[in-house]
Length: 525
Image 1 (cartoon, rainbow, N blue to C red):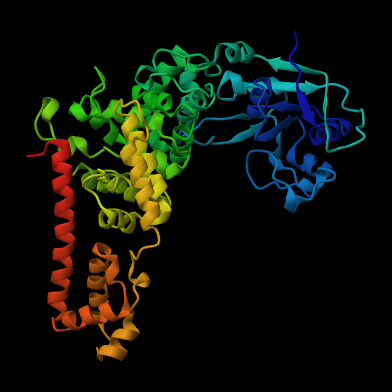
Image 2: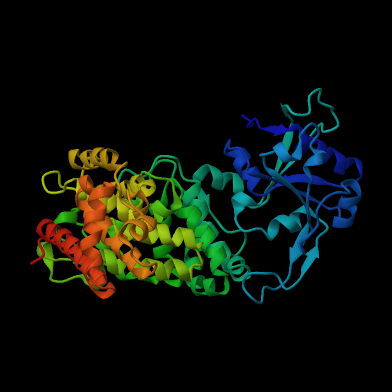
């Protein structure tokens, strides 16, 4: 039975306009794939034998700002839609083209316009993206241009894309090595498609993703081997383009599958080689996961089980233990990874800087990695300990930090994502959320110190306020103006160096207390 597909009326009208002008017009590429998978296209691509200047005569306000024969259709041509209110897909009209040699493994040395649809489809990346649809009866008007209508159509499929769709296979068009030699980014795209097109249900065991589950996609063998052979050509691709594809992989419903393919094809070696160092590194009994007791397996499982769809949380879940190989001491069940979160945070910062992530993304991800080991044993961590955690990460980031911990727990093989201790920690966070954890929340400020105590303006005022905050975090009852002034009088007797040393000592004591708790939990001698 022929699949039914519905098309927006504005697409029908665009095709109608091109055909009335004497040109061919086909819906092509990824939107055809999505339509046949019964998904809503993110963008609409139309291929035509009309040249850009001829397309612009039909759509005079079209934007033509590239060298690839693509005209972006202004939304004014979508009748009844106001551009500033439109949040639907873009519409691009591209002239049939063939491409010459790719000297830089990324961009064609020259783009030549082709005469036929067949020539255009033959230069595309994968069979599932190399199909076209021709609509019938486009001359029929529609009473309401904002409504969609079923139309008769025919599929042009020269490379077996429909069969590969049925079998959930990513296969290169023609000779795979040639496709990847033309554009090395296609290797990342192959893995991204395998990951994002897979069903919405993650594999029941993320450490056995080689065993295909229902709805999972795989990369055809020759295509897979060609990726592995050409993996080093990824160095010719800008890191920003690699990063964008990587983001789509780890934000997909099946991120572990994508990461495993990146590792197996050697692509991961080219942009996050630090991951390769985690393979085969045995963990201790806290992360015991049967025969899969390695840091890499744990990172893979943590990413797959991450409950958040935020990029920073996914990145932190995947990279949170990246510092373990460098920090490992001992072997077997009693091995330790002391301070791996601090080592890992520095490594993550370098990785994300190398991949040119935005500064905000880097800072938040690093913060989550650095603090993912926060201690929350009900009997040992009181309100002051919770305040210190909130002070370090910010109350706005607490839930994201908890999501990283949940991913860490589930990636360790535990059955329960949110145990009583973690629920209690959430309760405590809510309880102390209005407590003073910053200098701004103190019931005293620099003007008070100068006015009431006669302290001269200068760095000493900031140092006194920092020490007062440390005292208040331990005991919120001290956060009253009179009490703080009394404490400030004593601190004013110390010189600036003494105050800074006192603040440093306070921080060191808090850190040592936390470390002792962590040592107790993770058997560090």
